[in-house]
View 1 (tube, rainbow, N blue to C red):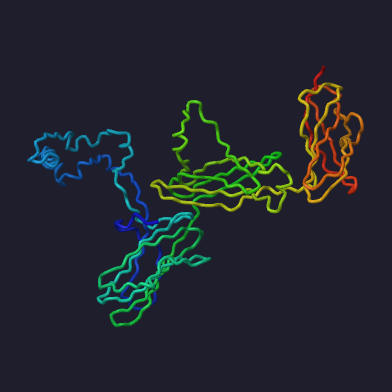
View 2 (cartoon, rainbow, N blue to C red):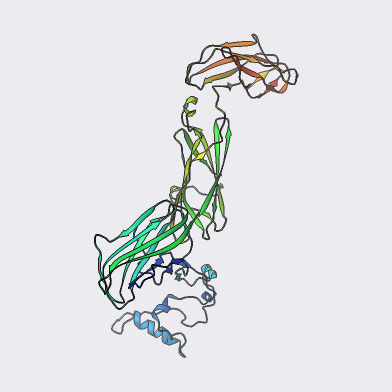
Length: 463
């Protein structure tokens, strides 16, 4: 993008500069970072700034006759040949400048923007913008100047400017050639801005000038995540912490789920007094994360995007997705980051899955009831047959919910990635809250017992 700071006054100097080759050069580079200005509170701002001060002479308010200031401004607004009478309201002395006429006056802000006086920190996701000037401080003219500027990191070199095809014809004595370069910062660690010039000096000697400017890129924020899985639902909690010295206003914090997942953000319910409107939804205020350690938490609910359970048991299914984060600083300077893929907690894969689908809402004592179960084949081959039965208690305690009728239920073969539903008849022998425990699946051909179904709580009532 084009920088709006071309005309900035005295941009801040670059960081530590490495010396060029030990030879006399007519040219020299000066690198200045183009940073946004800031509002700096000033105790002297209690002496309130008045826009009319711009039009008044310097000694207008300190002269023996303060009414001269009003006469001067009156002459600007009402020329002598004008017939209309205009009265300029207000007191032109300093006596009311200490009064707070507005709540904003308590900020002690003079209303002026201050340019940075130091190079400042550079963060990942920002746009590094630099104003580079090559100066001729000698008494001779430099001709046919080829200028190059590039960013060098630990991984790559990125060319920002190259005038090889159209060299600068000449830089006269005392003159300079200025240009602006921009680079989207996508790597952490040490960076070097390399500026080189190849030119002819006054003695017609071809000279090569390299200069190096080093700076370090830091991480503006950290994203800590926690993943919890409850049955078929996965919850992802993300905590974003601000490591910068400036407030960050989060324009966008979007979680992009992997192909096999669908994500829904969970937010707190709004207070009933908050009025909902279409305009309010469109003009939503950005989320503020305060400087130097401020945090904000996000919670997402993830569900499999396919109704077929076997579809999510593919290679790489532990990948949940990644975050796209964009923000702005106090004066609107943008930043953007994309996190790495977030992985779920690895869980051992099962060949088959047995789960309870439906249980009657009302269960009476010593009356049979049906528990609807679902058996899913999560492999690419046909499995079975199976037997379903109620395993005895490990502790030797007598079960209060038993199988009614045949103690073993035989199930047929199950095709790849297919499911079958079946009913198991059971009966409760005690009142109150009871547990259905020990429902076990047995593969006949493999002679393999699978883990019992988790306990299911029911309430047994009397007729």
